[in-house]
Length: 73
Length: 73
Image (cartoon, rainbow over all chains, first blue to last red; front, side):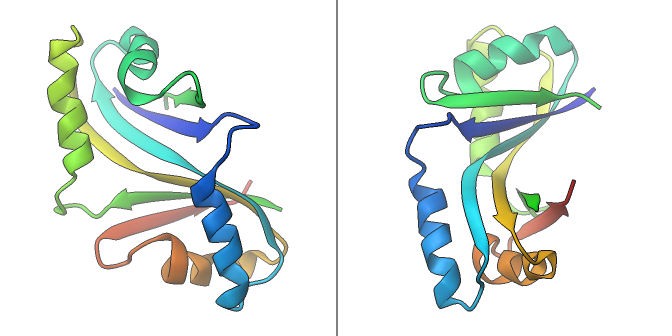
């Protein structure tokens, strides 16, 4: 089965990529954009979906500074 | 309004992060995982959602090698 994992910086953890995008937007003529957060998207095909949780914890996300959300269709 | 942008390497474009994850998994004891693709997740708050498309093209994604998908709730 296909699965998707969304990985985001935890609330309160500095998100330098998000800050960089937010600061760049007005210079490009885009106003009214805020709360930009940048994370990672992982899409994979897995035989046993019970493996997803440990795969996220041990390899895909850094649980100290990142939250992950597993989406199975 | 809140919006989410999923950015993926285009089909056929080398995805070295995905390959690295796919190769690391068996060594960690996870089998049966394939087709790993790694992209970026951007979440933002935007006043005018018609800006999303040009923001993706000019700043968030590299349209030469990446596809983007805009999700508005």
